[in-house]
Length: 228
Picture: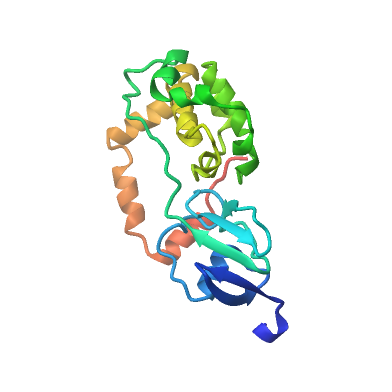
C-alpha cells in the first residue's frame, strides 16, 4: 500500500517533525523516519523492557511513559527515548543471604519510604500491581512478591515515577531469587538434567545437530514432539 493510501500523522522525534503512518508503533515509526535502532530495541514484543520511552501530546502538559514496541503513534506526539531508566542494584551473594524480612531492610531500605501514591502501578506497561508487590516485600512475603512481579520486564518505568526513589524491579528480582532458592520445593528433574549436562551426556547429540544441513534442521523442528 502506498503512503498516499495510508492515514498519516505528524510526530516529533527528538524535536524534529516527521510524517508517518498512523498504524505504526513508536519503534516502527522511528525506523520509518530513518532512525537506525541499535539499542533499546530488544524483543520488539513487550517482553524485554529495553525500549522505555517518554512522550507527550502537543497541547498537553502531562509527560507519559511507555514501551515503544507496543505503543502506537498519535498525531502531534513528541517522543524521546532514554538508554535506560537508572535503577539501584545492590550487590549480594544469594548463597549467603536468607529469605528474612531484614534482608530488604538492609539492601533496599527505601521501600519503607513508600507513600502509597500508586504511581508505580499506574505507570507499569505490563499492568502489574507494583505497589502491592512492594508491600509484600516490606513484610518479607517473598513468595507473594515473586508471584505478583513475575511478568516484570525490568523496564524501570515504575521507578521513574516513584517519589521515594524505589527500584521496584530490583526489589522484585531479589524476591524471586530468594523464592526460587529457598522457598519453592526443589525441582528434582531439573537438578538431574543440569547434572547430565555437566557430565557431558548431550555433547555428542548437540554436535550432531550442529552439523546437520539447514533443511534437515527445519524438518526436525517442524516434526518435533511437543508436550500437550
